[in-house]
Image 1 (tube, rainbow, N blue to C red):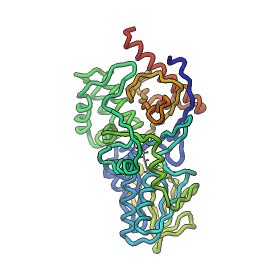
Image 2: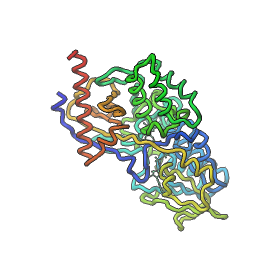
Image 3: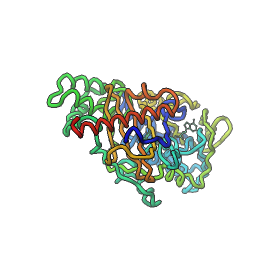
Length: 414
Ligand SMILES: Cc1cc2nc3c(=O)[nH]c(=O)nc-3n(C[C@H](O)[C@H](O)[C@H](O)COP(=O)(O)OP(=O)(O)OC[C@H]3O[C@@H](n4cnc5c(N)ncnc54)[C@H](O)[C@@H]3O)c2cc1C
């Protein structure tokens, strides 16, 4: 069966090379703490504020954290009495800011570099269905403000049980191992990288095997961060997020972003490269004047100097831009004419190399056509992401076909 299922269509992400993302989501490097997120989001005087997922101390790297920070920045600008505010970026933070400002009667203009809204939520049409190449789930569902919006809009959402992935071809991760790691991380030196803690652990792995530890780290840290373990902070790099009742939206995140963008003045294809803060207001690209500006460009985009600030950002903001960073997790959407994988909902595939990790969402429930959404991190990104998108998709399909076949053989005891 796995050899005969035909690929009907596919889509492949390239977040790392996208100039308006430069990575997947923000992370805390070994010389940083959550305080750097707070510093980055602290207003610069009364006319400039950076918002976006990277500025949320507890909900970073997630759409609802981004949205909350956008709303917070908008309330700040409106409370200061600004009548005309510019917003840079039409992702979740920028849309949250724009909508909140408009609701408060503030004139708002959103400048978006790309020719679409949504930022790191990115809807794509694949073989007749709508799926997400960026954010997929509404995480921390019970306390997620966007989940409440999805409910109000009557969107259909589907639960993913992250606690119980089906491991295709290999043992599951034993219980208790995460508690052990969390204790070790809490006791790490302030500047330690996660790799140092891992090395210590592997030197004395009992009661676990080294294989179990590697599998756990690949699944929980490499997959969730997409960053080198030596760069990631031991104390703060393992942030909360995935696995708290998460649900994905049938029809994709664009159902939310489209709603949030309704009626807003959004200028697509308008990258902002220069922001001047003067006594009487702000000037964008030397031509657009406003009373204040809210900047939601992703952290790596700002860190790369894509936007010049005059006067320069204060030292704590600049330090945060260098100490925080972003990892790389990429996605592949594959649609088939028949299903060849077992019914379960969420799958994990390890190997063949150390840190070759992929996880797979069965998104067939979107419209009934057999669909898999693969997330890739670690070793795979060096070997899989070469050539054309069709070649990447075919290779990704080969990985899940092979893992499914291996799983079948294991179950039959072959
Ligand atoms: C593969 C992947 C999977 C993810 N999965 C999830 C998930 O399941 N659940 C979840 O909650 N989160 C997930 N995330 C993270 C989530 O997508 C982000 O945290 C969130 O969308 C960030 O919103 P933002 O507004 O801060 O930034 P962005 O969405 O990046 O928006 C910033 C906007 O600014 C624009 N921009 C950049 N520079 C400029 C400029 N100079 N001038 C004008 N515009 C500019 C960009 O084009 C973009 O539209 C995922 C991300 C990725 C990449």
